[in-house]
Length: 318
Image (tube, rainbow, N blue to C red; front, side, top):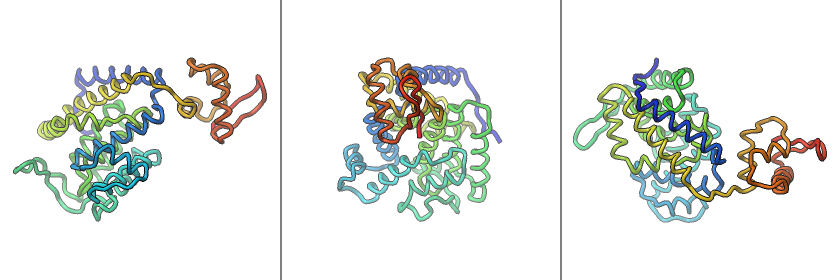
């Protein structure tokens, strides 16, 4: 069953702008950002998503945890960060359309924080805002059918992935399938859905902008609840996505390392053989000698295999 929403002129305009920015990102070799930028953005993502949920650790403390340094802070907050690091590191193994994968991610994210980590809630819940109940979530016996319907929509509906990722985020929050951790799961799963089609989203800190507009985030969730459809929330999230891409493109003097170039080219070559000339065509800013050094480094480290000699040399990723 298709969740209720409308495709407005604003949504179409935002989707067109986002598609244009993704093209610019690919042209600037930022579809898989340089190593240091990926690390910095991943830290911003974890910090912002957990700060929305009340985590008190700073970016510096989260950086220290990633670097396996000792951090002094609330045990719960430290565990939340360690779990978030683990689930984002596990992202490549998760299937955005699979229910078991969805529960597995929640299990990692909430490990040691709640007893039912990775399992659907078994009781009814209401979302309280101030002194009033803002939302009564569906009863527990409806959760698995509702989530299966939502995942089926995500996999099979013909609407654009950009739109479906926003719909999933909203609908999952509405269903509230877990006793805790639904907000961070909604944001994580939208990243996973987008990453499946556009690699740049794996390291794009969308959550940082959500945190900056946290009041609007909850306001649009509430407006969508009241309207009985996710249109307003889709518009909000597409604006966030567009601004995140614009921020990425505004980064000046991005210099790629040999590893960065090798990783970027892997998404182009896939399992096909390629030549040094084809590698150079993608990275026009480097010399033939640099291209040769990149490829020799990749061969020496078992990243690619080399066949042939001189003009007949071909390479293939392992």
